[in-house]
Amino acid sequence: ALLAGVLMGLYLALILKKSNTKRKFEQLNHRYFKGLNYLLNDESDKAIDVFIQLAETSHETFEPQLALGNLYRRKGEVDRAIKLHQALIAKAELPERYRTRALLAIGKDYMSAGLLDRAEVLFSELVEIEAHTPEALHSLVEIYQQEQDWLQAIKSAVRYQSATNRNMSRPIGHFYCELAEVSMTQEDQVEAEKYLASALRVDKKSIRAHLISAHINQANKKHQQAIDEYTLAIKADSSYLPVFIDEMAACYFALKQ
Image (cartoon, rainbow, N blue to C red):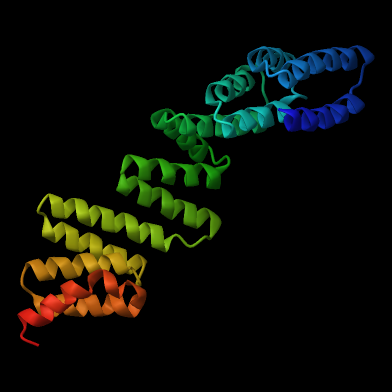
């Protein structure tokens, strides 16, 4: 709280320095320090009420209030973060550049609170209007992972990769492997093999894809094909050999090698 107060104080000093009227200066000064006093005395709810009033009357306090809400979220006080950020959104005639930043903040608040459906709606809106797209897409990938919606996770990861030029081949390959595992539980081997092929197209060194494929071949008594997949896994990363050495040995034993 002390750090937040200091930072907000510095920011307010800049605001007041630029303020055009003495009256405006005095109003912001009084309200701000009233809120700051509550904050430093650990009376967060009273501080939030004061800062919400500031949000309703001035755009100039947007930055410190946004930062304060983020601080509440990091401290685990998500309800307070949501309340403060929603007040920023509710302000009439809020400039679009501010509104989208507040939407991003509330989306992160919802994620922290486990309200994934609400967070998904906000991040999807930001992607649609092309505002803070990389951050929104990255958050959507996290949401879809938690929801185990692998197709949507792949879609968002591909878009995130395109927007940032960051290599997402490994997580995308992982998502395809998850789909392959789901298909196997549904006894749909053909579909599983399609997903594994997609995984390897995206990430040629996907050890998991090779191992799943090896297990499928081994279960179908195609021991040589299984050995081939295990060998490819070794070539990708030999440090994983202890994980599947016994299964690989069983294939050689079945072939009397």
